[in-house]
Amino acid sequence: MMDQANRLYTAEQVRRLDRCAIEDHGIPGIDLMERAGAAVFEAVRQLFPDARRYLVLCGGGNNGGDGYIVARLAMEAGIPVDVCALRDPAELGGDAALAAGRWREKGGVPLAWPLEALDAYDVIVDALLGTGLDREPTGAYAEAIEAVNHANALIAAVDIPSGLHADTGVALGITVIADLTVTFIGVKRGLFTADGPDHSGDVLFDDLKTPDSIHDSESDSGILIQENIFENLLFDRPLNSHKGDYGSLAIVGSEVGMSGAVRLAGEAALRAGAGKVTIGTRPEHASLVNISCPELMVRAVTGPEDAGLLLEASDVVVAGTGLGRTDWSRAMLRACIDAGKPMVLDADGLSLLADMEPERGPRDWVLTPHPGEAGRLLGTSAREVQRDRVAAAQAIAQRYDAVAVLKGCGTVVARPDGVYAICPLGNPGMSTAGSGDVLAGVIGALLGQGLDTWQAAQAGVVAHASAGDLAASQVGQRGMLASDITNHVPAVLNGV
Image (cartoon, rainbow, N blue to C red):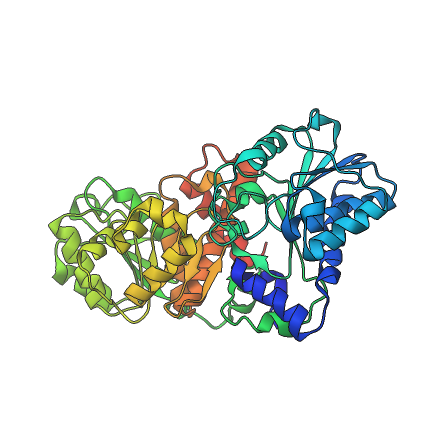
């Protein structure tokens, strides 16, 4: 059974999980709120043990109710704590009112906003706005969020940082930048993509002691891809094996002036375990591509006939890297699609594909767009794609009957049936030319080693991101090269 911390939900799905716990399993809502407040309080105490003075910012609704419980528990533990109520506790209803009442029974007296001297606090608990937020914070809430972000204190968010959209991960205007987020019942997918990682800090999940059957009631949850995904997909190689057992890849691309793209993809594929890699590229630079990597084979490809011979002898095709948008480029892409082999399509190949619509392609293919390319595939803009990255990846997968890999912060992998996964790894140093070429080569290599498109896409994204994190740990994020990522791929895949 899947660990509940690895399942991703929308805000509406979590609300249904909450109702299921209360209505179908008889767990009182105030008990769930008490458990949530306790989870935040214990996390803050464990992760910030030197904090001596707390401030809890409480809004209305259940998020504020959680905050009152945190404050009460701090009082009971003898920790100095203040509560700033942006909504009068007397105006609260339901479980939030109960929580605020229990805090007041302990002697709690709310402070009013605005507060001066937030720097007097070691920890600020953000219990202002919850997962139902769908518009930009305004008024006193916006003022409080901005003040929190400028305070010299550690910030712990209750369930989700205030101002962050729970489904899309988009910061809706001014948004809390937390050091820690403790999320409940179901993990909100917005914490891990788009602006989510910049605002959430370390994310801890607590299921509030709810039974697994509650979570199983939402069958269309997403997946948080795990770093150890390779353990169940890649196995020790038998001694009695040869290069043909691990896939013969054809990498087709690189118009004149862009020879580095296929070079990067080719070496990445070899580093990811491909048995053989042959590059098909323009005659003008065919003799130069493998000078520094003699393990790559190269063929000059002038037209579809040359490409056809190369593709026929290959198990997997990687196309589009540096392909350009010329007549030669279009002819190469057409040949690759017509070959009917498992394929990874990247970069210029995606832009050309958008012009060839409708195009279903081979039965097994992976499309790896960045937001701009995703926008072209969907006939929209990169901005629109970024407004809901999961929905965009799902739309591409469905339109092209492919596994879609929407690159970016919190890379999204989606299947045509709507199932999606998000990668929580990677770093800004990977935002460098050629990084996408490396990813295409890695995914292609995994396809050649017998993984299906869904497995190869997820494993490839994690291998790429983990290698990027290793590279950043050694050379730093600023100035990282795509080849630095490639150099660490073997260590990731071999678990060393």
